[in-house]
Length: 302
Image (tube, rainbow, N blue to C red):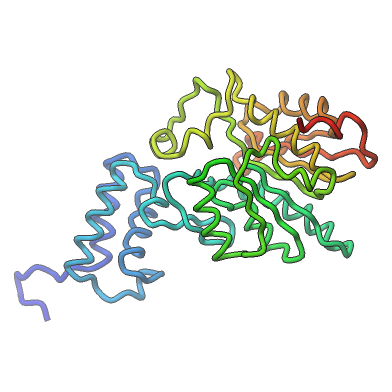
């Protein structure tokens, strides 16, 4: 029992409240959530209510992690874990931290793959610019019949993706290489080609410190004034990889929909449509390969 006038024993509740206050003062967008997740990481227990009261060492570790987060180091880099749909994936410097809106892009690819599987055939799905492997692994785990291939250019991101593939879905084929020329063995054979390429314009510096200072430039900047140099090349390769009637899905910025619809038509894709995210912003392109492949699609990948 605590003696009158004695300090109350340390508690996770008090520690989280103090951490949240510090994070809010540092401008962290979600201080309450981040404080709780950091405490759960230190405690090794979730939810935190199940944890015994913290030790002095644990409180010291939490203080150190809060200091790192106050410097705007991404939460996912601190904990080493990134949540995406139903998955908990390894995260770290060198690989893009996927945002919630990309879950909708993955969902569109999953729905398309499920439709193929429902017809009694194993869908072939390709994730170009896979980064940590998030989209590819979401497809592989939510559509078990799918044969999933993923391509990543960065050796650092590829290493993180390889760890995630090994832990989550070892059957995914992961390729280190240039997504604009990758997978020649799959040209014209893919039911779904999905990609979240770099698409930030060269002179558009991201507002969020976590993105600006910690996400790799290779995963952010798409080249050119409109940020679409790389996406246009990726879209051409996606069109070449798509099977007759296959679906191509590409994430993009809210200002890029019209340009990408135009380019989708130019590389031989049909019925290009822009879809919105949960905030109402234009978020991704979906377009279909012709049911009968023509010259425009056959040669657009080079």
